[in-house]
Length: 250
Image 1 (tube, rainbow, N blue to C red):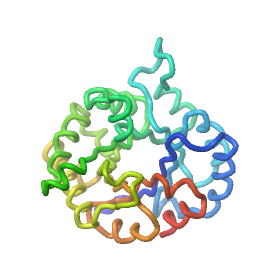
Image 2 (tube, helix red, strand yellow):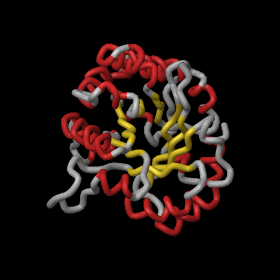
Image 3 (cartoon, helix red, strand yellow):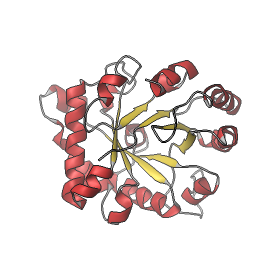
Image 4 (cartoon, rainbow, N blue to C red):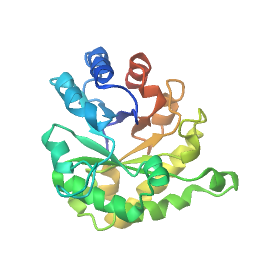
């Protein structure tokens, strides 16, 4: 089964609107054919609409970094998934380790968001991680299983392959210390097997699984050569246009 790879960048809380548009203008004509590889940039909400306009007619897809699980209502400061979709957004990152740690997001809340995003027409990029403590203690990555079971709970089988999973060990995010490719493959393989247990082999083989955590131009080829790694979710390496293009055109 051939799964279309994804190279995605997550800017987090960085860049002004003007900087974001300039970034898009610098890279948009130097991207791979979308039939070969999907290129995605996730940016702060305020920059999304200008970026969509700047990227129009190019392979670049713009993603949101978060959304709420309701379409509308008295939820000050939140962003509606239907509003994102109507603005031309394709993907939304959900359950990033920073959202879980800094904003106390639970698997139950993330599961609600996944359902809402799919209902709105968005493709969720659902993040799961493991802790450095568990890794140092010599334990394998089996802890990610419970997270996948909770985050994908009660999804309709026909919607599961619209979800992309990003395996991001929290100890590797922003540290410059990337996980060994064999360990990364082990984690992604375990995620795929968990999805197979939930929804069957056919659906699991269609789901794209990314690795994230100090991804750079030096390690991307080895990571993406792994059987169960279908792309990367990069943080710091996505903030500079030339750095990001090295990832995209690896």
